[in-house]
Image (cartoon, rainbow, N blue to C red; front, side, top):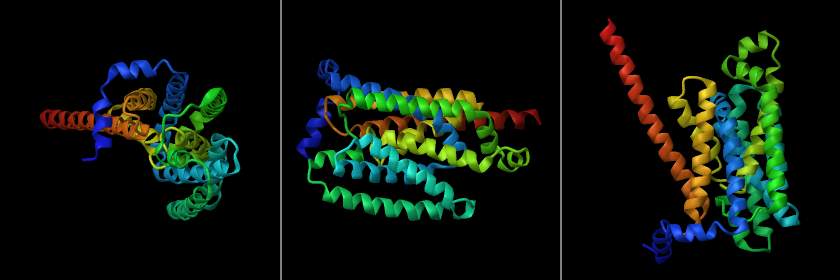
Length: 294
């Protein structure tokens, strides 16, 4: 086992070092960014799960990586570049993948092209390799006042739009055929929601990394779905789980100095396993009561 890994793990529970690091502005900014992202992921995650869009999240994150890599190469805001790439991906998925049977193949084709382009852009970047690596795996960085402001504005836009379209979107997610028959603009809602998912994925790339952004957008929501009895309860639980994963992952990663995605994904996965166990136990008890009643 490498000495680097051993040293990092030995520092993981050095709480005094963690407390000392909490005094720095860049750590406080990272925690605030993680809290905002956790809130956003918890709110939008259950809708992603109910609409079976997990694969599209992965595809969108790859295109947001392309936008971020282009921004890194040009020398503009990486966050804005990631958002631009994600929005372009969402529009492409919405326009090209109108039919359900071809949606996965369209996502795969666009994602492969975007990832190949991102590799070329990162190769052409002459700056620090750590900056390029952090786009893939996530890292504790100093977002700065501007980065926090962009994150907060994007989060407010996504949450505000979701509040406005939530009822028809939930209807279209649960029964699209009936919703279309009732006059709900199902296709337009799908494109708008895809753009919102793209923005959220782009924001997550800067903290969790493009490769593991699904850990925050999918895993907490999937865990909540195992134990929740209603969409509202699922959303509340997903927010709690996403906050635990995001903020907890950043705190655990402070002392050892490893990519935050390692801890965020681990916490989210443990939460999912616990919720899956609880859900399975409830189902067994319910089945036992049904048999006993007969």
